[in-house]
Structures are given as structure tokens and as C-alpha cells.
Amino acid sequence: MIVHDVTVHPERDRLPREEQLAWKIAAVATDPVPVEPAVAEMIVNRIIDNASVAIAAINRHPAVTARAQALAHPRPGGATLHGCGPEVRVHAEWAAWANGTAVRELDFHDTFLAADYSHPGDNIPPILAVAQQCGCDGAALLRGLATGYEIQVNLVRAICLHEHKIDHVAHLGPSAAAGIGTLLGLDTAIIHQAVQQALHVTTATRQSRKGEISSWKAFAPAHAGKLAVEAVDRAMLGEGAPSPIYEGEDSVIAWMLDGKDAHYRVPLPAPGEAKRAILDTYTKEHSAEYQSQALIDLAFRMGRGITDWDAVEEIVVETSHHTHYVIGTGANDPQKMDPTASRETLDHSIMYILAVALQDGAWHHVRSYAPERAARPDTVRLWHKIRTLEDPKWTERYHSRDPHVKAFGGRVEIRMKDGSIIADELAVANVHTLGATPWGRADYIRKFETLTEDLLDPAESRRFLELVQRLPELRAGELTGLNVAMPAGRLDSARLTGIFGHKA
Image 1 (cartoon, helix red, strand yellow):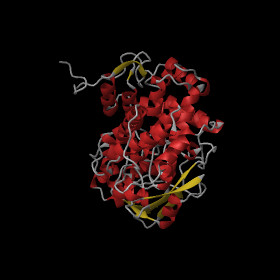
Image 2: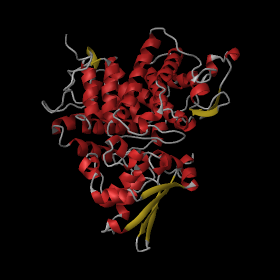
Image 3: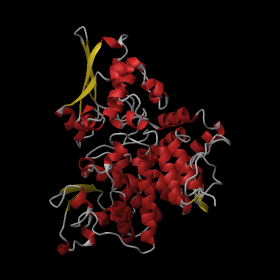
Image 4: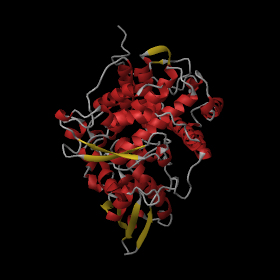
């Protein structure tokens, strides 16, 4: 890897484009390195993972809304939509929008945490949609997705957005644009402009993940993917972008991030070096914020011996800065303690999640968030006895660059009214690559079959799984089968009419 120093430059410096971070990202995208077998294997796993959670969410309101908007933009020979058959084609940017929203709705796919947060699987919907519309083959899609993951993961390693209250999808616009550039075999100059455009239009505040969290949390990454598709299209047509978008004196860094004295060190593969960043990412076994995954597993084993939850005096969770301040009591969000809060808020409340996981010894993407479950009186009482504390040890582990040290869990103390204490800790989730039960292909397939068994025809399930596992050898035209179709009559339609679906 080459570590690139990124600083703000006054306009009078006229930073050469070859020294700009966006150009260096574009150069990685155009480097024709082969996709390693382990990377190809993991890309297939993550396409399966995305399809699992997209179909599980297919009839939830945000997914229905996004699909209705996409269906109002048909295009012969365009991209396909999860839920619809291959005969339904829409413009690629709208497929990215609808599929991206369905994938993101349950907060249940892959993750990478470092200086900032990310869900790198959000790269798959826009890059796949363009591949379908442009007639690319499986090998090209693999190259594009390897780039998308590589760029996003390395931006997340180096540049913290959340401390400046900028939403993490600002790293997704550039990564998706770079991945599309690789997919289409574009030259460095075009990708350079597309990356800059994509960053410029995808910066937004983190209020989408604060307070009364709404359905926009699901739409936000899909919006970034849609804008990335449009940015690449404009760049291919010869349009430029604000430049240098990272280093300029009125740039994103200068005014939205660390300011004129900023200094970031961004690692990117050297010329000829394989793109392997996807192997550093991890998926979810439980439908909740990633920083809760290990704590859910810990709760399962800690709750086994407790039968009287009113005998609990308090529960203290010692964890990292990020967990305490984002999903813990350090967030100072009263909504995180509110039984009437939205699902989007509850899945960002470790207090709620821990209470339910302790009592139920299981987690379900629907039942665990049901209003009647959240309002159960004994759960509410337990929930309100939970508080989080930042422990520097866990913060240090969270930020470690050593994968054998890096951790996202914590230590839980259950303090009983009789004075006894039940204490335990867990560093990483069971399904993490270093966890108790790390996942392979069979586990991703099981997740797909579990989440879709009551929704798909068995023949459609088999068709998709057989096709996606042949991804490296798929021919142009076969990629349209990588979205999963629901049985006739099982796909909900929007019941309200918006602007796009309005009929004069």
C-alpha cells in the first residue's frame, strides 16, 4: 500500500491533478490487476447477502416507495429490480435507488468500521445496475466491485466524517463512481471527474442517524449510489467537476471536515497491487447496528441464568467511544429509551437491543422490533436500567489497525439487587472472521434461505443461488438474473401517488 498525504492547498498553489486524492483514486480504478480468487469468492458471498436482506425487506414501506419511483422510469434493456422479474427494466440510476433502499432497509448487510463507519455492500446496487444496463459480463462486475470495496474501505480507514457530523455515505459516492469506472473500463481522467462530482453531491449531515431516525436512513446510501451513476454519466459526456474536491481551499475537507490545517493519510494499493479490502469487511448475523453484534451474542449467553429481570439493579456496558456516543447513553437521545420509537431508532439503541437479547436469547429482524415487543413492561423496566460508559481500552481496540486487536464489543456487568454481579465480555461477533463461528459460503446461503423461505418460490431461490455462484464466468446479458423475483401477486405496490407516478 502507498499512504498518501492529503492536505488543503490554497488556490494559488494549483495542485496538479496527478497529486490530487481523486486522481489517485481514479488511478487505482484503472489499474488492471486481476481479482484474486478469495476476493471473487467474497464478492459472491456479499451479492448473496444483499439479496437476502433486500428480499426480506421487499414489502416494507421504504422499499415499496423506492420501487414505485423506479418503475416510473422504464427503459428497454435497462437494469432489473429486486422483487420483479427480468422482463421489468428501468434506468440504471433508478435501479440503484430501488435496490439500494431494499438492501439498506433492515440494517442487516456488511460493515467496515475504522476512522468512520460504512456498509461497503452499498456499492453493489449501483455498480450492478450499470453492469446490467451496459451489457457487462461477470468478470467486469467482479473488477468493478473489487474497486468499489477497495476505495470505500480505505477512505473509511483514513478520513473521519462523523466527528464533523457528516454522514458516512460521503465515502460511498466516490467509491461507487470509481467502481463503475473500473467496470466500464473508463480512463483515469474521466473517473477523476466522476469521483469529484460524486463526492461533491453526496455530502450531508448525520441528522439522518440522530434523534428521531426516519426511513431516510435506508434511502441515504441508495441516493448516493444513484448520484454516483449520474456523475459517471456526466463525466463520460465530457463534463467536469469542482476540483480539487478534497484539497481545495473551499473543498469538502477545508469547510466540512478538519479544515485548512487538515492532514489525512489515505492508504491506497500501489500500482500492480491486488484490491483485497473486501476481505477486511464483515457481515451481520443480527439485524441491528454493527456495534451491537458482539453485544447481542454476549447477551445470549449472559441471560441464560436469569429468570427474574426485576431482580436486576442496573446493567453497565463498558465499550468504545463510538458505541457509547452513537448507540449508547452517551448519545443523549431520549428517543433511544422510548418504547414508541421507530424501528430505525431502536436498532441504534444498544440499551433496547441488549434488553431484548438478554430476555429472548434470540434476535429476529421483525419480531425483535415489533411495537408490542418494544412496549412490554418488563422489557421497558430492564431497558431503562442500562447505561453505557466509554472505556479507553475498548476505544483503543476499536481504532487499532491490527485486525487481531481491533474489536467492536465490550464488557457487560449485570448488577443484581442482592449485591451479586454477573460480568462477561466479548470483543468480536461470533460470525466475524476472528469470531467463534466465522462465516463461509454455506452460512451466507443459509442466511439467504432463512430470510426468503416464506417469500420466494424454491425454484427461484435455486436459480439465483446457482447463477450467482457462477459469477466469474457469466456472459454479457446473464447479469440481469442477479436480482431475485417474487412470486406473482406477492409484491406490494405503492398505494399513494407521487409526482413520478402521477397520471394526467
